[in-house]
Image 1 (cartoon, rainbow, N blue to C red):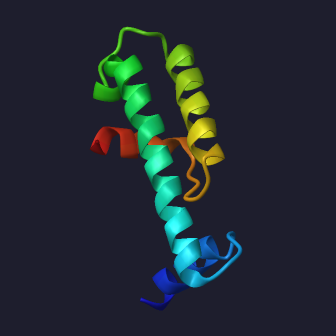
Image 2: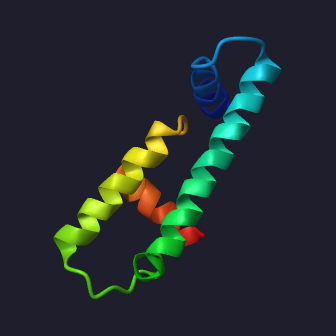
Length: 90
């Protein structure tokens, strides 16, 4: 439990202001990231479903672009594989 608490505080420390202001900002960030994910899945449903006829380099490029967009929207920040798992979970 202490590890999760430290991890949560680390993410919150990236925002100035009170704890509640930082928590609200993180909530907005996650909402922005969900919007980015949904738009990607609507644009590339084959990739979102995990069944595509695209070549691997094309899929890898799109996955990296998605990762960059999601990480640019703020914490949480994840690597390509973690975001791929998130897309698969949606």
